[in-house]
Image 1: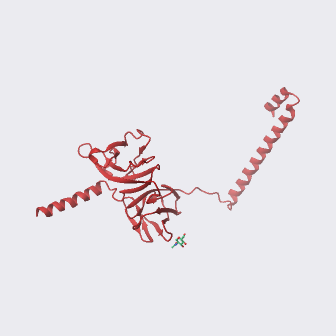
Image 2: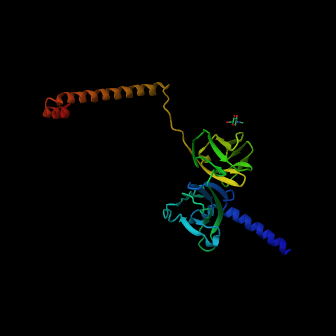
Image 3: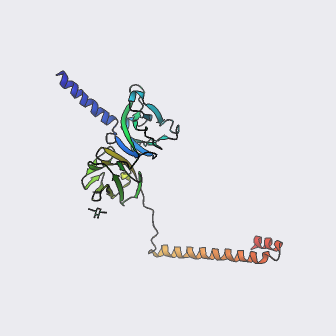
Length: 276
Ligand SMILES: *[C@@H]1O[C@H](CO)[C@@H](O)[C@H](O)[C@H]1NC(C)=O
């Protein structure tokens, strides 16, 4: 009975950790030495106003602070921000060295142990196991975007929204956006998200086997274009162009006049400039 209850307790404890600090999808990221990486750390809404930080080291008991949200500019190598609406604090590590591999995303708790989640950066000399050319992608509302996730490792392919669901196989949907995955070309899978809405903005993960690669998607409103088929718009456009042309002509005429008189008399030139 004691054994059973202790294992039940262990399960309960694991679940609490996941809901408390669900970075559960992000644990291992491959990066080339010398590059920079941004890792999004997800937290529960109850910690919205808590201080967040990145701790460096394999063991939690001996890890050292790098950056904290209440003192974000303390270092050039590390940076941190806090997106309280998405409940994500992204941490950036620049110019990665071979020894910069072990980290903890952490949330400060005033009375009690800080909430934390470990992640590993696998620093490579050659091609990373899973990588993207750009971690930051932008798209327009209603349009689609395509992300190329390149890999050199084996394992299952997935496209996930951080802290939400994943798409496996060739198609699916995440938060109302249609996702299709094309893995017909070796060493790369392309993810197309179509029907983007502003709600699609956020952090996603390319997943291949044990590795994850975070990608940030920003969806903006489409810039309004002028419809020249509208008669009122085309007429005002015509008047505007005519006015600009007239102005340019006037300026050119004035300029050539001044130059013309310049050689003859300096004083005359000044008078002309003032009165013309
Ligand atoms: C996947 O991509 C390849 C290469 O770009 C293309 O030839 C193929 O038609 C695509 N497959 C689908 C299902 O879109």
